[in-house]
Image (tube, rainbow over all chains, first blue to last red; front, side):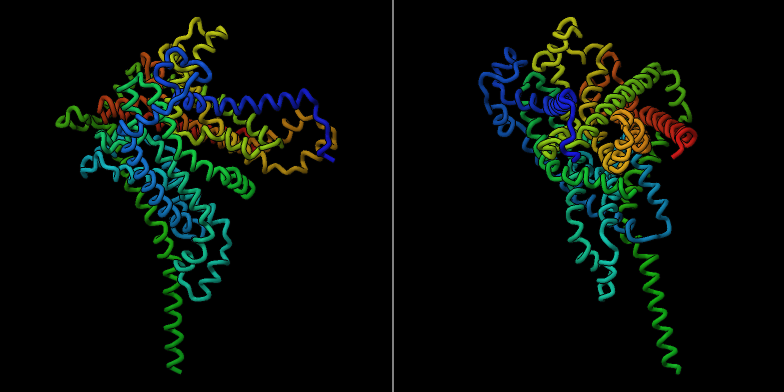
Length: 280
Length: 310
């Protein structure tokens, strides 16, 4: 009966307007990015602020891909983000599993440590990290970025993985262990296949976080051939500040990996949080 | 007799050993790598960072490193730029938070109703959250640029600006640029969190209230808000700390300028470390920021215990 409940037409119109407002607010900046990236250079000054240019071109993308260093920035960022995502997920899966299944001495201390790392300003450690990385000779190397980003992301990823493990009944691996598996075998053969979606979501979160990190990359990388995408783009912006079309084409390219992962994980976003809220 | 006894003992030993392994050693095998990474890459540098704030340590003067006690803090106390950055941090955090929260709450309430193509809609309005921060910053900086962006022209047409110029270059208005980008980027986060909380409110409560003749507004203020309150309190507190620390948007959009009008404490830390290479002073600012945030958290937790009975 609730379905045929009448809503006031004015109320319905207001809701429609609100829906439209949020959609426009969310998408307009991205639309603009795309629009300028396909606007031919000669039209930028005359039609920079028009809603859609008279003619479009892919020249900006072509020059970004083939006549600039962006492919190498892109490759560096992919290496760093994939390396960070893989290392973090592996470490966090272990820690999340321990939090979910064991009651051990020092558990509360470890949780407190992890919470502390989420609260203090990360910029506090930018100077010490620079000094340490310089001392071990890893400045301008992607390894240093992977190690730092992994540490930054482990606490959050651990809590995420713990919530996924909590959703899997303990009986499953206990049955396997009863049948003679060690805990590690049970984890590998029984639990791991069940938590693949969780592993995927964690990989995605960490990948996007590593993909967008800027300040530590700026500090630790100064050589052009080791630059990640954010650093490369920012350097490009400060050097060629009028090549609008090319900058925005690079921006559109930087958007692609994050959007792919987002489409993949957004399904879990509300679900995961909702189940957490119900439980907790 | 003796053999069975011996057997029993060895069985017991084995059982004891396996219990020992399972409860005293095995957990650390799983948690170890995480603890090791965090301690080595975050907590050790954090301690070193705090010690830097008591040293004179600058990359430009590599041989003049020495312990200076509270000298950096004394300099900080009389540094007008620091106090200005503190005020800017408050403006930045409060401005971003108010809009992020109210728009996020509105979006969560909308998404808690039914309408056609909701899944697609939800994916699209959450998209800004997935955009890398440096890119959000650049995109908004470009939107505010009068040559290629529409915003100055729109604001001039609405009479907000006398002529279409770049507000990022105007010390009086520049802070609104990064705030706009931050609101755009942060609304999905609040919407997701609040939506999750909304969906955990039992539907029976609304049905009962409706039967008793409660209006929509009454249902909102008497059921929805009280149920959301704990979630709102914890989210706002964590988000405040996060926003106050968040330097990327401002650094990319204005670099703290013009005339330090958008310099907040965290960009001041970064600019001092990255541009001036003065690690000692940068660490002192960072410690001050940490202490302020700690004080804020303590006050808020105290107020919550004192005034909200949950």
